[in-house]
Amino acid sequence: MNKDIILSNSLGNKKEKFIPMDPKKVGMYVCGPTVYDDPHIGNARPLVVFDLLFKVLKCKYGNKSVIYVRNITDIDDKIIQSSKEKNISISELTSNITEKFHDDCKYLNCEIPTHEPKATENIELMVNMIQELLKNKFAYENKKHVYFKVKNFRDYGKLSNKNLDDLIAGSRVELSDKKENPEDFVLWKPSNDNEPSWESPWGKGRPGWHLECSVMSKKYLGNTFDIHGGGRDLIFPHHENEIAQSVCANKTEKFANYWVHNNFITMSKEKMAKSQGNILKISDFKKKYNGQVLRLALISTHYSQPLDWNEKLMDECQKTLDKWYNCYVPVNKKILIQDDDLNPLYDDLNTPGFIAVLHKLYDKAKEGKQEEKEIFTTACKFIGLLDQSKEEWDSFKKQNLKLSENDILKKIEDRNKARDKKDYELADKIRNELLDKGILIEDKDGKTTWKIK
RNA sequence: GGUAACGUGGCGGAAUGGUUACGCAGAGGAUUGCAAAUCCUUGUAUCCCGGUUCGAUUCCGGGCGUUACCUCCA
Image (cartoon, rainbow, N blue to C red):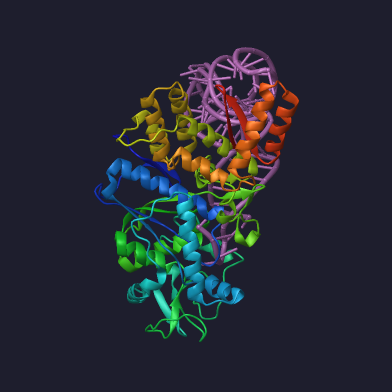
């Protein structure tokens, strides 16, 4: 489609036309998980949002022209702490959580990124970057620690609209006698004997948070690239520090041209976070809901807005997909989605706008024409919905059944016999019995069918 | 204290300097033994006060309220 993609750029806080540096090589880097605990639906939001942006970029520039990098941070103080609490080794913890994370991505029907680098596999590049920063006088060493010297970087605070004086006045700045200034942040620190460590010019130790993203984005996308994404809470300090490190080490003007940040999921209007103890794990949904339901719920609000979570939302999305599956047809040919229909997604990833389009296409499809149904199904598939056949969708719901299918059919037969005798009292009694067990009976066109309520 | 975001019908949630968002729930109807599902029809809204304008929910200013970030976090 010829229309431009519009994105809300956190750098400058404006909606802007997206212009890639090279339309044949569009780069997007998104901060992936720190693998220390089970992924929750707050983590799921950026997964789905940037999966959609990936799809939209590919739609505009071609499948092979978009590079999507999402890292896995598998070395961090939180991981060390969590492995101690759980009393398992760090490698066991990180591989375990990484596996869960991948399961959750699959459940949410997210595409696999082009590259998914791990921090521990790129330590050498981090050491190199620290050396560059030392050489360029943006870092200093003290007692086996290396710090970034924030004062030497003029543009510090540009992304998050902060100035240095405010930061220093902030109450949570970590004080350390090894730092020259309180606002400086750590690039390398020594490890204790029981902590993971790598050799470096400053002794055995490990990298500070932030460095892995600077290094791995450079590795796959270059010193300057198009889009950097992540949750809002990463704007400061994580992304601010990434910019500082990258720009000062690579001696470039810019790091990422467009910064896209998703807003939070809230519970009773308060941010969902591990530190708040109000999280819902992605895996908690797997038994009851098909992943598509969670996916639809996550995109029912624009990514830049907070999304307040509640059960009603899931029920509504379940209902919507149940209805939409009435018009599902397998599609084997390539169908182009109309520009007008795609427009909401091109305009800053307006998912609620696109969902409204899907409702409109459903209304056309339900009139019965095969072609309209194919168009509707294709449009749903574009955002990762209706990716399973109707049979798969139905069978998912049957997996938690308390009754066997034969028992149900027997009951239906009994009921139909009663109906033939006009014994409606007995017929309704059987129906209600089944309903109590979550099975809904429908009499349609002279036939009786059942489904999960 | 500093920096931001947000406030739209009963609920969720887009957009817009003038004209239907959309969905859920509610109401009425078709269908049904009754239901369910589906289909048809339908009511209801822009936090408050100023300003700009022919016209403001939209732009500007001031309130009020909610939330987030200020070196753990998606």
